[in-house]
Length: 440
Ligand SMILES: NC(=O)c1ccc[n+]([C@@H]2O[C@H](COP(=O)([O-])OP(=O)(O)OC[C@H]3O[C@@H](n4cnc5c(N)ncnc54)[C@H](OP(=O)(O)O)[C@@H]3O)[C@@H](O)[C@H]2O)c1
Image 1 (tube, rainbow, N blue to C red):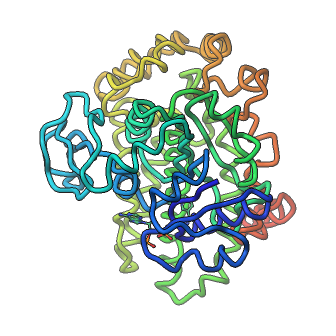
Image 2: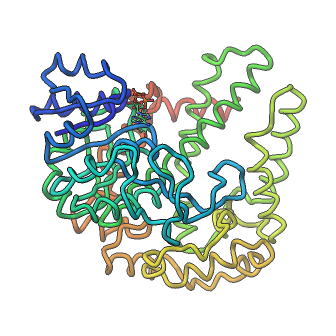
Image 3: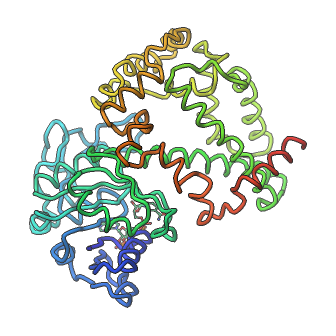
């Protein structure tokens, strides 16, 4: 194995390979970070090229895709402009070289057409016949572009999302979502399992990233909520350690509602609710007011308040919170062909749902046109690994989708409990604290 990138995560990955008896070569941009691993038996390469040449499997885990491209000498395509000012201002289709200087125009589809001048062909040329396993966090589009680039250079490509923090790597609680070349996965699944539980999500190199980003989105929602909660109680000098057990048990209680919301979303039937949107939108104003009264920023809360209000304005006031999901879609036309194949009706409904005015129609139109039944039947037939296909289909093939993930060792309770310090994150304490909450 070769591991490129010896930050907190790269070191943990290399350590797990060593612990499992795999000869491991390591390289890091800044020298000296491989010393401890060398003491455990790793070979330190002097250059990235030397590291790549050393092994048939090259794992890259650096900060971001720009760093990946710098290391591999791959060009950097410019993303399409986004509304926020956070992305690169250059024109879509431009290709930036490895040094991130605006370069010559690229292909209209933003594909990576040539090797960048930074580290270059010499490094990229070494990839032929090897498998590149990129465990760097990025977007589905970035993963697909790099997969294409690697394939054009004769390399197998696997993209991965690490759903773990470094101390978890190597334990069964460490989940590595993986997608890309089926042949490469079949050949190296055993080796990769040194990192923990590896879930293969299919041939689309972008799928692992899609899941990774979706899961991180859920995680940041939770962490953002926690930060707000502690800031609110902290404004009255309540110690966070005193209040946090209540947060943990409350979030655990609320987690139990997610499967029902998912079912409502898949069935496009948001009618079953004990907590309708209008009630929630009304109550949510108090979260904002309290923030203002207590001198706590409402910046994390405002978007959710706006979305609730949009749901009510779209005549969904009597619906469940799950009705808001469709309102989040800003460009349903971007549904991938894969998604459309899985559920042809979905795209049309999203198109309506993304527009508050048209969402009104969607709300009153519980036609069941893409109900759970047809949705899952389709995906089972195709064996696709979309959210809808994580039922019998993925289990039949022995693959681990979120569906099986839930029932396996990666259930929410066990997955984070140990390493994230959520010691009270078990059913027993959850129940107890929930009752406390109820009586308080
Ligand atoms: N840590 C986590 O909890 C965690 C969990 C899941 C996924 N991840 C993902 O794992 C990846 C690595 O995270 P980390 O925690 O290891 O980050 P980190 O500790 O900050 O290390 C970053 C690594 O990237 C390298 N790097 C940055 N820019 C580079 C460049 N231009 N060229 C070459 N190397 C470059 C750094 O090299 P230098 O030493 O030379 O700076 C270092 O090895 C990220 O994509 C992260 O999102 C992390």
